[in-house]
Image (cartoon, rainbow, N blue to C red; front, side):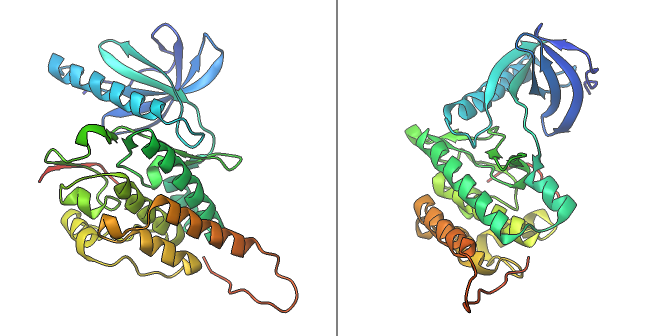
Length: 301
């Protein structure tokens, strides 16, 4: 196994590694300093075994380039910004903007379910960036709390386009492999059918459920039980979502052609946001709404 790079290493003659931010799957993410532009960046290293073959290294470079290109195609403040793709010692590195704050998954682990007003705001931001993603011809395919970053100041950023696919040329039709996080994938992804924008909206619904309730809607603690629940079970139980429940249920409809689309989801979230933002004056009363690690899967269908 390849050793973790030392802090202080200079990558591509420009990016000075400072500290390891996180690791998982195929890569590690570093805080680094861009010594040319004098700014902090995040650098994703595709960590390969020292004995990796040339074929494996080439596949990693293709994967990195595809990920960077997919994210770069999305011209929206809610998509992570890609600065560069470099190669060092035969391994690809993606240079991205450095984000403040923490992921939604980290927020839920630390603080539990979020207030419904905040979940609604997060939902509106994610609908906007997903529409921009789909307009760019990209399906993200891995919307989940770990890939949603809550920045200081309120910006919400969709990250990790590592398994994104293009919409054109029928490339959203499965090739027989399932990739994603079991508790957040759509039923059609598991069935290995067509995967399109509606699949991202299902994952959005699962993400909003987790934000409001504190857990994924179909997570059973077992891989195949979770996948079965995604396909056949109703989400729930709902204990905290309150007025947000109909929107989440509409996004979690099993059949993609019956699911809420992005325009419908935005309209419903905006209506809820307006209602909960109205001043509570006079005698009118409003109801008060109270308030397992994910992993990547690739299986043959």
